[in-house]
Image (cartoon, one colour):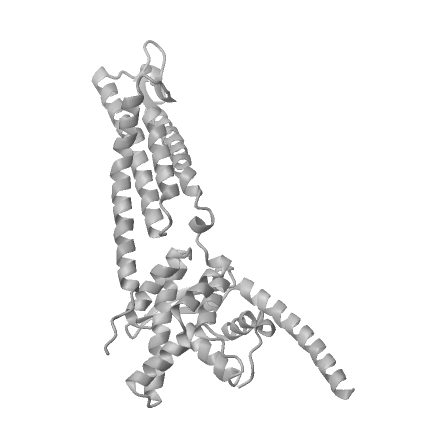
Length: 243
Length: 112
């Protein structure tokens, strides 16, 4: 087992479903253990080659080591146990954070203007707030969530099937959502509202809107995953024989 | 070298590792050496068994891990939690109960 193998050990463990924290820790610990064994053998008077053989034999074959980690259910990542969560978690998180943001905005508005009946808003300000809310709810929030789940999926090296489905679902639903902020005339107060609508007439625009959110997240995700897989496979190849 | 029978070793790594860590916090290599030396070679768990076992015990909340950088290398030290101590007490009790029973059987069959 050489040093390059230790770097790949963590990667191999993550790919087999071991949680990232345990995989990275195993990499550090087993490399340190190997060094300690080498030091012990050298101190005993073994040659460098003998010492390395002793240390390698004590650590054992990489495949066996990986199998032993993988066989421990406690060490499996949640994404490996419940990969379908990636299909639904983005939309659930979007709904939860959208509701929380609206509630927060309502609370702040109430704190600033406890008597909204008396507030005078110019049409220009209302239009600016609408643009800001649209950008926040329909672009910044969903794209940030999609990126967060994409990074999480990449970090855990899981199959991209569920994350892609989840991101596409999120972006499709967001494309159908609209939010609005306004001031109703007379004694009626400020309002903040969100709605979801679906119409076949607007389908091409909604599809384009969904893709404009999903594609900038999915292309880097697929590319990063592909690059990492190529790198892993090239590093996993045994080093060329010296003979 | 005596033959190692895996079924007889079931539960032993957990017991002995918890027992060692009840005395002081240790890192993996220290634990492996302490087990080997302390048991006079009878318990040589092997690194491939030790680390998955340590991580699983931590995942179950029986021990906690902390990393410390010493002499340019990172060591992960393990220490027992309160839950780990309670688990150790139960394991020791069970072990003594079972081993006393096994001794009785072995003693009885020797006298036949």
